[in-house]
Length: 218
Image (cartoon, rainbow, N blue to C red; front, side, top):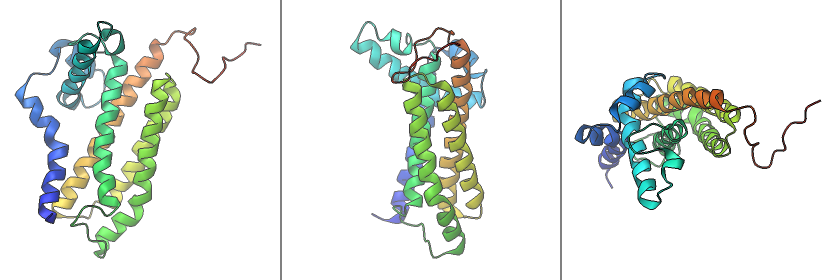
């Protein structure tokens, strides 16, 4: 496959959510907009995460009448589900960057000094960021909000360092990397904001994390 074709496909993966949003209004405009306004990048939150959230809610509702207990009624906003779709979007963006840093995308010539610097500094760092993101997702499944927040913030720092290392790139490769790295950070910043809101809403007597015994009071 020609390098130009692969570059176009990678861009299509990153820009597809925006294109689908133009075809339909975001779910539950008022609840979604008001919720996204509580966090960073509100317009991006509405445009990119609204359709994803609706897809999850609709699928669950079609599978079980109790689907709303998992992700909320279609058209409403459930913080846990919003965090989940934000992490999903970050994972997709990170996968594009990882593909480039692993040398799997034609056109990324490691012999060019600027490319080599980017590759040397980010191959391991991007893998580390993805591991932290996966860890944060796993932590959310057991409501370990602080662990999820810590890992997500560390992933943001990792990717931020890659952004600096690769800022001298030019052409399509720079566009793809900037788009994927910026998207990764935006989505995780949105996720971190709503994880903190979830943590604030968790009552003191909430069930302990599975596998971790409750703390004993003196």
